Length: 385
Image (cartoon, one colour):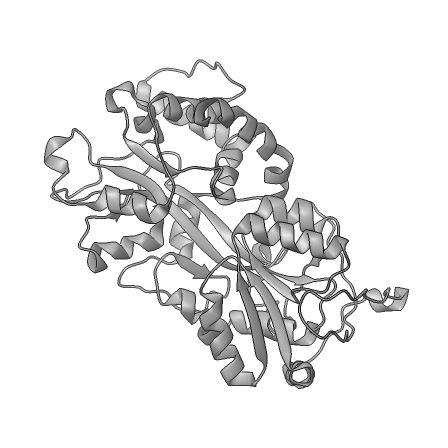
């Protein structure tokens, strides 16, 4: 993935005494000499983290609670975790920083565009890569640090079907197949808006134009800025079913008994982790992996330090822990989430390695999303509201 074109603020780590999360406590200004990141061995980091005795994390995933429990059990360090929606987390961190309120020590958050533009560029968050992992995590996932990648893919009802009938994204815009695709409202989840933003860049718009010619047998005639915008317009005008939850979409797609009544089976673009419902809820769900020019998209959960962290060593230790097999377990026990540490296993019976998925998916790039998402959302307004 192309490196995000941002300057990351690297600050020194210093002890800050607070009485409770949310109390006002201005952090001391770092000296010029303190701008160099301190490098500690794992044992030194553990010792200092234990001396702090606590760590506060804001996360956009409920599974942080399980990771916190196992981290506390291993190191004897108290964890105060909060599970927030992506926009809630971003707004909370920004407001606390502006008010000089000491809150989280680190965040585990999604929505790269807003994280980069609203929290990293102003210096509220900064990047930290554990020294023990610099030769393990792919360079493309280190800046900003991606802990996990999560994929959303085209998943269809495969009841009675041996081979996927979906091979080109323009099928969802074909007037013959109205009300075919289901997708969560991009105004309700930032990563969905980021996906639609990414397909308007030069690289993907060219591929989408080529896919149009492959499907319809003629060159695309633009009525918008490029083929990415044209596909967005076309799927909405073809009665895209806009959902409010990936769970609900998965259930609507996967209910058995639908295929005999339709030319093409129900299909949705949602998190691959819902494919587990094929077993747990007796649904028919299978990914369409041979799509032109993409089979979906992926986004990441970023582990980033807070500049005003009261417990910086414990935060660094927890970040390091998330890359271990035990730390990844709350996510790795399911399909659809992939550790940036390639040594951590996946559920091979129901999933594929991220190396298989990545070439099939649109990747999220924070700088592009931050620069262009408002434009795409303005374009979407005419179709959603």
